[in-house]
Image (cartoon, rainbow over all chains, first blue to last red; front, side, top):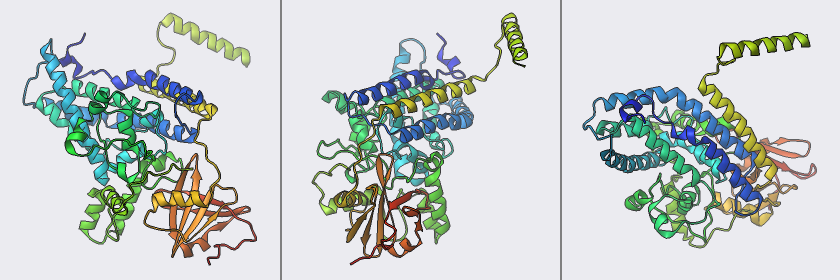
Length: 315
Length: 154
């Protein structure tokens, strides 16, 4: 087995190794739907868009991986601590990394929903009206360009080797794949309390006002419970998936770039530098005139209407 | 020509065996990309064959109002018209026109000023309303040629 120092330059690509598993699980999920053993829905054009977005993200990721990897290694060479990476003490390093990386993911994910500049890169993951394992592969093409990867640099600065960070990020991504399903209803309560589960993540993908901008967790749902962003899935309010204004077609380029396009349009229409800054870095849905359509505003209006009754499913 | 091609292939295969090098050198990333593309095609095909889309019945007045209430909860439609194929609907609320149209097995809503409906394109079977913003969309309402457009409001 290679020592971790060597892995600085040749880390294990957990996500690539898991690709056969992704394919098998998607085929299994489709089979469960076909056999009517689980409430699984696949629409072929939606599936094609999701999978092509996944393929494109690997190309886009490869274009920016050098910069991200180089920066992480550079920061690690200026690290604060030499953390143990051999033998049993390495276990403590892995546990600490698991927790800190998951917390970093929570921060990244929350930023990606609550600020439009980062939402523009993340929105394509949410633009499907379906929630299935193919949706999980609907990954960002522009996430490497908006600098969100900088959030992981403090881990390298603390002393976690870049290879370990890369592996842990991969583990987190692979974990998050399987929770994109309606085939699994609920896990046993203790697991639902600690882990991000299909139920919790369904809420995250829902566009019902009650569920907007909730459950940002990667692996552990405890961060949402700690920071007040947790919302449990309710049986009397089925999740309606997608974004507040759903896309009008299955065009892949629209899915990737529509929010960037909207930002550009809104910046050109801004009447002051402050407005321009707000349309770029304010919350998604902010606009200078009239009532805002931010998640917070939508939820406040929903609460004011007193809509406690369940939402009937779409026809 | 066919024989020449077979001979060339045989020659190259023999060469490959004797050199003990791959016949074609593909960068691993491109190979991975190619295999992924094949697997994607397989998964899309299986999803299509399985036919497990959501069932979508024809829209009626209540369904259009319900879909609009999700996206425009603060707006109440005064009147609703349904495309004769049941795949799209139009609603009026004051100066606003709201459109619902089917996309795959889901629905999309859009709005525009009522007066802009007159710019919608007439086609052989009905009306096409194109939405050119970042979210895009094209609503196609099957609309009798004899019926007024925009519809008359009482």
